[in-house]
Length: 201
Image (tube, rainbow, N blue to C red; front, side, top):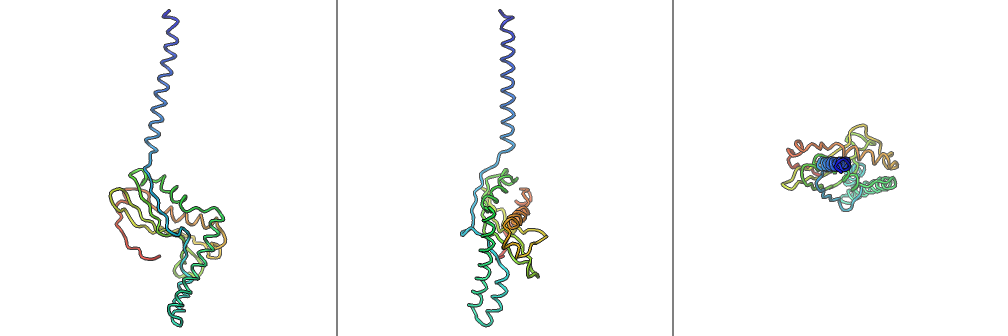
C-alpha cells in the first residue's frame, strides 16, 4: 500500500515545490518592477508652442505700430505653432502618452509617488539662426515630500530646419522625444536640484 502511495506523494511534493518556486519568482518580478503612481498634468490648451520668428518681427513692428506690432508678432508665432501641431497630430503624436511612458519607466517613479506637471512644450528658434529650431519641454517635478525641480529639457544637435518641422510629423515626434530624453532619471541627482526661475522660453 505504501509502495503505491509513494509515487503519488512524491509527485504531489514536486507540484508543491514547483508552485512555491513559481510564486516566489512572480513575487520577485512584481517587487523589482514596482512603480509608484504618476500624477500627470498637461498644459491648457495642450498643444505645441513655437517662439522665434514672430518675436523678432514684433520687436521691429513695435517701433512703428506700438503694441499692435507686438500682437502681430505673437500671431505669426501662433500660426507657425498651429502648423507644427497639426502635422504632429497627423503623425499620431500624443504628448500625454509620451510623457507618461517616459516617467513610468524611470527611476524617479520607482523611488516615490511622483507629480509631473508639463508647463509648456514645443519648438523655439535657435539663437543666432534664422531657420533651425530646437524642441523643448518645461516640466515641474514633485514628490510626496517637496518640490524636486523645475526643468527645461532641450533637444541636442542636430537641429532641424523650421520648414521641415512644419511639414514632417515624424521629425517633430522624434525631436520632442529627444528633448524629453535629456532628463537624468537618477533620483540622487534630480533630488539635489533646487527650484529655478527659468522665465519664459
